[in-house]
Amino acid sequence: MEHTTKTKGGATRRAAARSRKAAMGAVALALTVTGVAAHSAAAADTRAISYPSRLKKCADLDCKVQVKKGEGFRAHRFWIERVTFPQISKNNIQIKAYGDGTEMGCGGTPPLHCTINGVDFTVKDVRGNTARTVRIHP
Image (cartoon, rainbow, N blue to C red; front, top):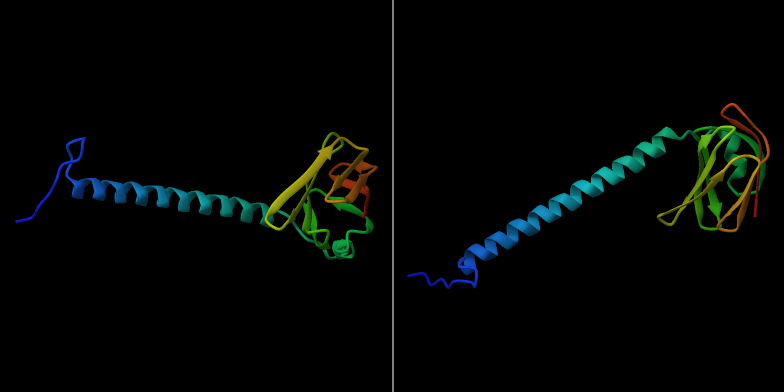
């Protein structure tokens, strides 16, 4: 004969354990789905950015270039692994830098001067969706 005892709520201990396991499984599933969704969103953001070869000279975070909306480059200094320009217009410029699992950024209206992780970004002139004079230097 199997021995069961009741909890304060009236459920058997075995049923309470099954209920806890089911709840923990639901939480684990929700966290997994959320993580997949967040990873997919980050992957979609990465795919939306192009990395043209003319921006490779900015890898050391010291260059003067023209950048179009949606472009970026890979970097290897100051704990910055890549820099993107997701928004460029005459009313709004967004600059994002990624490194060590962190997203950093700055933005505003041109002319724009901001600093990310000790690196200065200066945008003097914007025409359409192109930042014509972008100066990046430590």
